Image 1 (tube, rainbow, N blue to C red):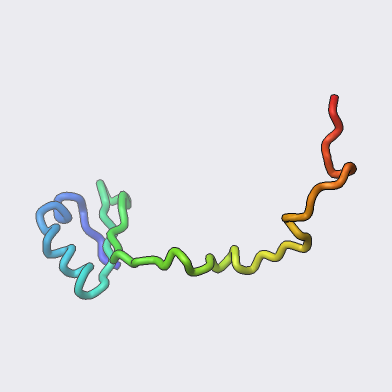
Image 2 (image 1 turned 180 degrees about the horizontal axis):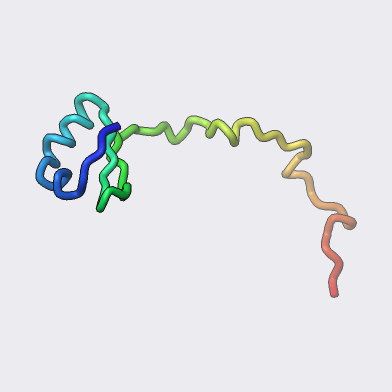
Length: 76
């Protein structure tokens, strides 16, 4: 991961983007030595692929089962 200050990022933007695109390089853009942004290669995500955490969840009941009388909140 390379570090650039804002002025350097502005003046070399085309070359920096070329490095990101061709070599997959990542950059941290800093203002006064403090990180402001990460410039990373774009990755296309598959919207139909299950999320790694969500795919581990298990439901131990039938969510389509109708509620019984005891399951409804009491009216005030």
